[in-house]
Length: 253
Length: 374
Figure 1 (cartoon, chains in turn blue, red):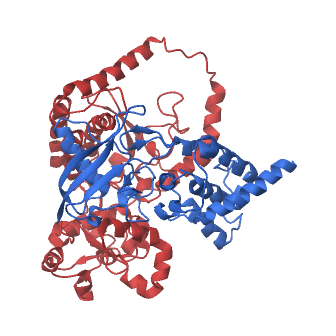
Figure 2: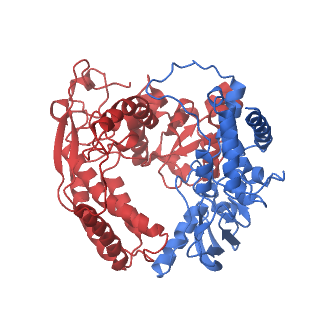
């Protein structure tokens, strides 16, 4: 097993209202089979053993499905590889002697809590504003009661693959959340179960998105380029159409 | 990797130890191994279930192959999950449509392309059996605290072994709680809740004292080092196969690890800001109690059942079920005459033995029996 000797430049910030700074760490003897987060675990263990404060970062499933991990690595959310989350990025993609810059996902609506951890609860509030369907529980329907065309199911699924990590926001120069909101709206708007609340959903989610301080979309698709789940920017066009329709309906009723 | 992969993947290990050693050193590639030198051990041992044998059986079989020295990967802890034949039969695009996301996940982790070379897999701890005790209405022994899904014990091991942990969440959420929670709510009125209650003050002081203790230890070892030490011990002594000797050893070692934790752990920082080391320390402190209970429970249950495989309790050639060919020697042997019950353990405080509440399982229409996967 090969090992790497790296230099890390990491953003440190003690709390939301404290000034941040870049600090330099020596990360030697890192196994190239380690994931990026495992590399940080190793560095943190050394920091603690030397009496320091470890670098805080978000993580949970470590297999690319939960959306908890973040990090802007060498200027790119989730790092240079493409179509992966930070936890799926492995050190074999780096070279011995590299200097790696590690910063939080930056956006006005994602305030830094500590070091590399940002507050992404703005996304939760957008979901609460309409990213759901209301169904009666207690007696499940028979299977196949609601036939759905395969194309629709596939399209909906490709939107539902969004894990809500926020890389789209971090990559956008305007810190726009349009890719996230459009994916979350589309995966319900494309299905029969999503129709009754469609108008309310689209208006509610977009209004909340604006209220949270996310910027506007200027169609440069940096979001699509960094999305670990390769969500298509085409959903943004769909959201714009759905929004126009919803706004018109709202005006006429 | 997800178990769904076993729908189309074939599990195998090399037949000989020598071949396995060459594969481990990279002198041979899996594609170099001729068909007759491969042991598709699940298909061999369980012809009617093959690669879809239940999780406990498949895991133990993988461990068995590796314990015999037939493991692959540089660590020797690995068997192959091979899609070559499925790709030949169904085409790569069908396999991609079925498992594309999982294949991508594997490729990222391992750096190898599973469309071209078999995956290497090994069983790992994913979650534990059991959970919080609840009644038939899913309410725990704390009135009003209902526990749903994997967090409760109600479907115990069967749920996890069936690879359908989601099912319990759906069943509890869709069918049980909508019927039981309203009933509970209709019987209580909120009343007035204040923080001036002496029990509130005691609980608050207790929680704050625990945090203070963790910060004040200022020892030499990281939380992770204790987590790893405990994890390896429980994995080794209370993992896929357990025996009395190992469990006794674990029950001696865990209190020693716990004692060192409370004397020598290092939790940096203070309680003033976000502190993930503190969160982790609290969790590892819980694991140190919970791991001990798991070993105690495993020691108490003198049978093999589902994921709980006690080496002392397995079928041998002397058993009529083996002589008749119904099952093979080495399969898990249950003792329903003595252990047809749920073991609910009551917590009595740290370091104090838990009290066993045995809840018998009564079967009226079906009788638990040994199932043959042959």
